[in-house]
Amino acid sequence: MKQLIGEYATETSCSYCDRIGVGDEPIAAPFDDFMARFMVGVHHWYARADDEGVMLDEGEYVGATTYTSDEVAEDILYEAIHDYFNAAQDDLLADIQTVMIPDNWVRRNWQWPSDEERLSYSWDAFKTLVKHQTRFLFMRWPKRYPYDPDGMSPTEFFDTLVQLLHGLPDVTVDVDLHTPLYRAGCTSRNQTSKSAAPRSSDQPRSRRPERTG
Image (cartoon, rainbow, N blue to C red; front, side, top):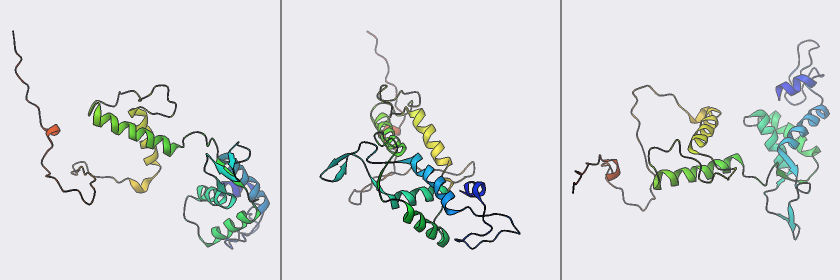
């Protein structure tokens, strides 16, 4: 957003944050120019429900999640800022919502699963794989249904997951080389705790002597 404002800056002061430029240096863009570019972002991520063929049933949209113009404005501004809004940004959001025409919106390509849904779907498939088919040698395993464009193989799933985590620095932490790591499992509140002894599947299996006839 800073780049956008810089490209269209013609004003020497900002009416939202009260910042003033040095000398005649422009630091703020006219609101109309800002809104023109803001709506480009809106139409990149969203489309009007009526334009996308979302069905109506007794005046209600069915088959797709719809969003109001206020919700779309808040989402796009948050994506531009990538942080919680301060007082000045709250005022900017209020002005954006005031000038946006009330409408019903859907996400672009709403007929297809979102990235989050594809990850969730692929994670469920991966759990089934390691629980019921192969516990260790899974990285070269193909995706469950080769003809499914939204499915991922284990390798594709973990590549996508790594890229996602790299974009979320708050969920990762660096540890020393010899830091001990522990595996934890989730249980319900009513489930009786079990021994921490290794499970039978973790124990080395003895090889039975081969019989000869």
